[in-house]
Image (cartoon, rainbow, N blue to C red; front, side):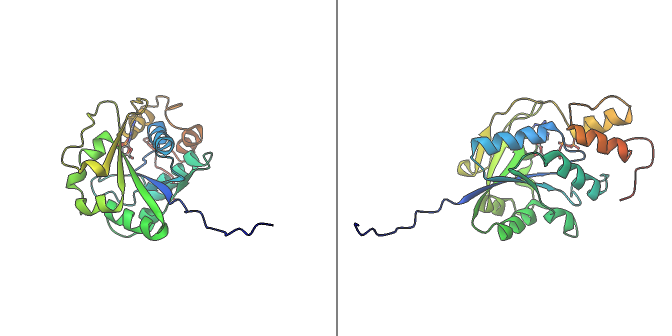
Length: 209
Ligand code: ATP
């Protein structure tokens, strides 16, 4: 028997996507953005991170409803997970804290923060924006109605990804629900059912949770 020397193969770093959002409610635009980024960048997992208290939005649905709808919407995809880091942190949510927390939870991973064209346009105004680019690679995905611009962002820190155009927004879904128009096929079926069960986005009082 020839003597063989065992060498340990280089272990590839895990690639973890982060899809942050208010998810009020989560819709197929979010899911397609995450799925496209996962395929393009060969991500091992995508963490959906519902915002606790958005720093830029005043009236949002109680976080546990938004969190549960995100769990329901992502449950069938083995690569999708939902993180509570922003839900459980006190005070307004800032992406810098999200990234620091995820880095602590996934110390050996390369992080990819996924944003739509509207969000990436704002990023230089976010808290500690330059440090954000040290912690993650940014993935800016196309979104109907928003020009995809990355001016001012270091070119090696942001990648642009064209994805199927879904002109869906949470604002539109909330308005449709309020006007009793259908929301089927804009959000996953389980989310439609959850919204109805808890009377979300209607004139009625929503269920306390
Ligand atoms: P709202 O209408 O309440 O402002 P929204 O639909 O923009 O909500 P968010 O939860 O604020 O949803 O978005 C989270 C992230 O998903 C952001 O980076 C946003 O740009 C991106 N995103 C949302 N909808 C789409 C879409 N249809 N296509 C691509 N990206 C999207």
